[in-house]
Length: 209
Length: 135
Image 1: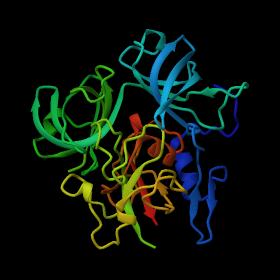
Image 2: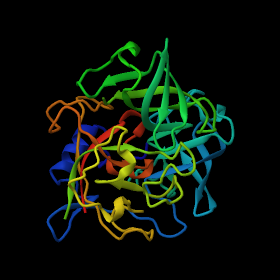
Image 3: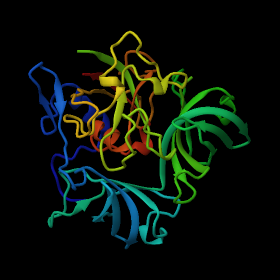
Image 4: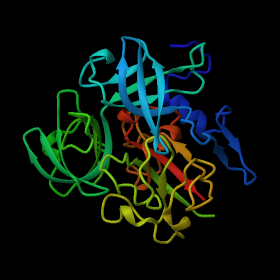
């Protein structure tokens, strides 16, 4: 990881500092006394802290993505190392991930490489984040009607899945606590690069009602 | 100025074309900010609480960037006031940080916007993010 004294590893400290307004590098005060945050990208430019794209190629410490933007593709080279958090069904080495997989990358602006290229603090391979209504549960598979279009998803609960009942403040609930009709928010990894495909391995699921 | 308190949930466009209808009917973009909040119809009947007592925020449309909208639907700023809603990473249940145990989802944001709101966090382990949206 590029050395940077301002890097905050603890997210609670980070958000607490934001809440108290001590988040000086990214939070400003507007004329109404409210905290505002600014992050903008010019026409044809990718956002500074985040890139989403199709994998072109990868090595054990870098990857090349084609990021769609305004009807075109921008090719972006991103480095990563052992400090990078990687969620992938193919393991932590991106060189084993098939080309054209969909990749989301967190690239904090204050953690650039010396040559100015991006460094990834996290990488998700074929990620899905959404919410919807449970329509069926069978063993470790939750069938869900996804919001925003109503697509049917098959969510697989694996040994590393985290299930929480956000509505009642209960952590690590069993699959049996989910019932048809309840609403859930979930994140996960699609089985293949077609993110609209049906099957997803759950990373995190919140039961919200 | 209207404001609404609750959680921001991610709409990542993975449902395909049209899944960003809340965002002024714009085409989903994975590399631009898109969001919708307050009294927007998309969340009615799902798990969001449309704030019917609140004025619609520019038709419920979101902004292309946090501060300056680059789309035609609105030129509004939003002022997210972040709260950590979980006792540990990736949990939305309360541990003294949120007003209530379960913050209603009152805003849908796409992944770049969500990641920005939580300062480059990995959305894979967050899921929900408490926020106050004003416009």
